[in-house]
Image 1 (cartoon, rainbow, N blue to C red):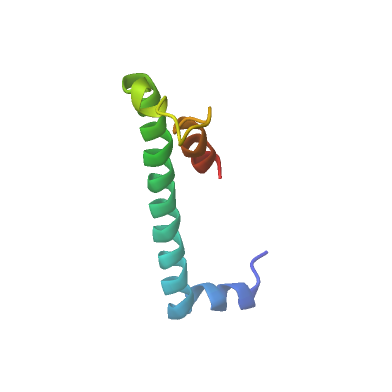
Image 2: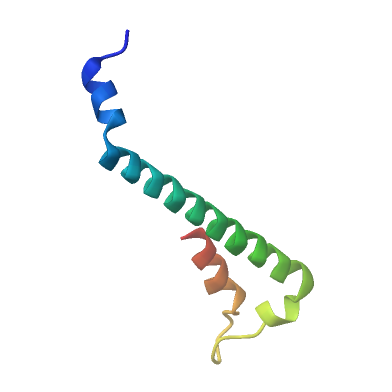
Length: 72
C-alpha cells in the first residue's frame, strides 16, 4: 500500500527539515493567536474603561479596532 516514491521523499533530510520548520511555525502561530485572543478577552473582563476610550471626537471606541484586529 505504501508508494516507494513517497517513502523516498519522506526519508530525505531536506524534507525532514522542512517538516520540522513547518511544525515549529505552526505552533508559534497557534500560541500567538491564543495569546492575542485570550488577551483581548481578559482586557474586556478586567479593563473595560481602557476599551471604552473614544478615538478622536467620534463615537468609535478603542475596543472596535482592537476587536477587528483580533478577528482579522
